[in-house]
Length: 575
Image (cartoon, rainbow, N blue to C red; front, top):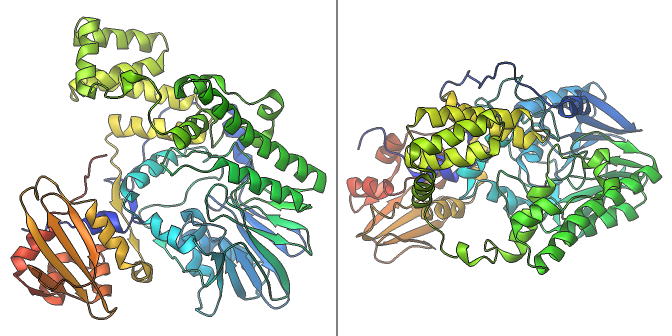
């Protein structure tokens, strides 16, 4: 089968794999790219610094996408959130050591997002250091490496502008940029001190309350320091309209619980507010007004969208009609640098009613190619459709150019003029966007289409990170990557036995469907016995697959048959 054999786990199970361009040193470049002034000015928010909020509370801003907070105690420090990589976290730790040489006594993770947890091993570098988090955070971290990870990561790279040059990426809306690249190292440390609703503890003389306040994520934890009146707000508030929906892809974020969490945060009476993105705020009344406005903005979007839904309006209609009241739209904390009211409206609709907008036309719509062909026929042929796209570009109607070229490229992906028109429209839309996520997505797609930029899987997790992932995640990922066509006539049972962890999994293939069953089958066509750590390292590309199978696997039922079985699991490379 040659050295090109790939198993689904290589590129899918270990979703923390990073992505890189075909040429790792290359970045997409845009000559004379324009940027809205308000987005340029927003970069001042992320000037790299360690800011002292009050005595013993320091926040590192501008090192990565998120902040990291240092709490200085009697004989040690607590670190809240650890950034997106070992390299970025190490830079922050060096900055913290300039403030105090006291050792780290505890780490607190406010939630599971990669930009808050992937540098944890830098601070929790001793197993005796407790890592505090909500009881569901570990499972959410496992979901980070879940079955959807390939598509979410590709979309994340577009959204954060990871492969754009310094002219194209100005800032990321809530941070300077996401510091993940082909040489980044991931250092996850599992939470060891967890709780459900609230936890009160004291470490190195620092009394703190950890409060479960779901918002941007279901496991969101805010840190309340009652003696200092400091509230570390996690990602429930930052200096931008919030990502009530993120274009990289996410489950529906329940807005009513986010609203309730902001109300509880407001009622604490904080004198210092430390978001985990953007800068801190001081002054009790200022913080109260800010939390109220943020709460009201989310509530307005939720309530007015639900009202419009009940009046029979469609997502497209609601997206054009729901607008923040003037006093909220004017707030510097509600500018759409990161989240978008329009995206949020669509998310509320879908989260409550699902994909169907009530129009019977959309119950069984035409396939894209059929619609494209009928549109071209209506225009008088593909050449006339191309004329319309040219005219739309000349008129500055860039969204219409995208919609027309959708049809043209569906009919003929090699239509070079349609590609060129689309690239120009994407670039024009990107450089006009004050929303960083939208800007980056437009420009990255333009580079993929026009500059040959290719976002590919690259990078290596540490072995410790790979070993910490449960075997169940590997097998769940295999199930959704079974090639239905190749296995259409196959009925086969393969058992995996892991003596070191005393686990086993049986995979049943039934004509295009895979069932993963914990435990060992009595009668299997093939049985593969291997150390679980070796198995995980192989799927994480820390080991050569063919050499590993040849030397580390004990197989009954035929080694060639086993290789053919593994070759059935192949993720789609094209996105």
